[in-house]
Length: 255
Image 1 (cartoon, rainbow, N blue to C red):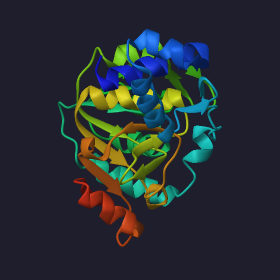
Image 2: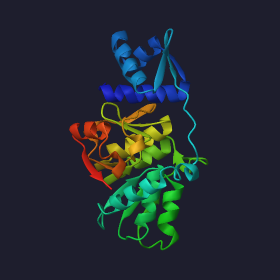
Image 3: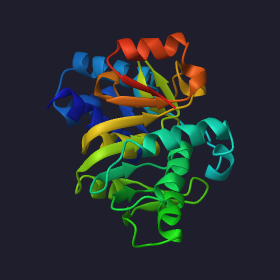
């Protein structure tokens, strides 16, 4: 079993059982205790689990503010990032959009364009795109388990539906973006959706205001070398964290 396959199997087991013994992991994955130790340490570093005596436990997610509150934080920066990101897109493209607050601002910009296929798990994004004229875009709202305070669908069904599509561009809004740890989120369910969108897209664009740069949250879902472009605001221009991301191979667009 390949390393990333082992990581995903461990995530699935923890989602179901919350606590696992080292012996159970080794048996289920068909690997040695030393391999289990390395895998567990790697996932602990991204905040996806915590080592305890004899095994591991799932980490409890930190609460995140509802989308209506999050979008008000650094609103001017989010809007400028959204306008710049919208100019990158062309009619005929298929997009993945997650439920991030900056992506919600992007949806407002896309509402005036046409000819896109937009696949999203966000109620807010879907409604903004169909509110003025449902014929402008083809909008696909992913099924799954609805989470009211976030305003999106999550879970196994959501991830499975993502894997039935292939997008030209995934435009995603991480909680934090770091030159070493990549894109990270607070919650496992958010990271699982974003990770699937990254895997099923040709190009990956991160929308992140200056406050997210150089920070690390709990669960990693996209390595820096898998990020094609970062769209950020002007206040990030002289930040060492932005230069570190550029040196990591990311194309930078200042809104």
